[in-house]
Length: 303
Image (cartoon, rainbow, N blue to C red):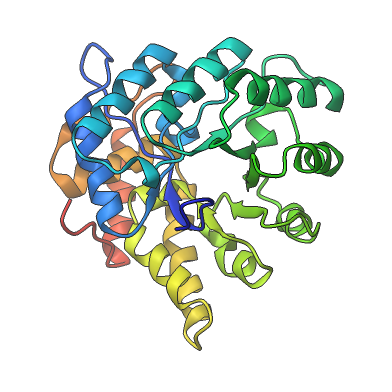
């Protein structure tokens, strides 16, 4: 990964919660360390982190703990996009103060059908409000959740006016045509990450930078292996193997399933817990998930 801009595989790290639903700092750091040991970066406070179920002070506390326990800040791309402009600025400033240079930034998603002008003003206000030349923003395009799509025209304007700061995008549209379009714009050193490893090989062949994937929480080594081997004769077979595991998880509610797999393979039942409004896997779902993963020889060694 470049010191200036990311490429490779990152995981939106799942967050362990205690019985009182407070985040468990030590388990969070341990899981981050397991992920980085397999060659992945950390997109902490992404969708699969249940980030929008956590407050800004909670996120700051978790970040402080990660850095204090030796997690390298340059491996992190924390999610700092909030509905409130002031929250986005506060969290982004704290991220930079810890030595991180990159953030993954959702658009403000509460108000719907907002204009490109409004979104441009939001992002430019964050950039000007932070006022730090080291800041690198990766836009987070996830219209199915945010209901706030980021248009080519909006991104083009941001890139032209903030060429150093607007570093790339994570496209979680689930539509390869959209990811391909982001790659084809010719923006200088603009890093395009797909939101699922199912598109990883296509993205790399189109000039993309990698992927930021939910299942990098549980299958990091295999995803990194494809990233490293994408120009070899084995690449298509490696992609097929990734797709098979991804499809298993996509048949269940993703966040509870990722946490369930982590609980199963670590032997730590603590990981089953999710924050409301999400709910844990049912007994039947757990039985089926365990059987499917076992039949496909899936493991999480060293967890």
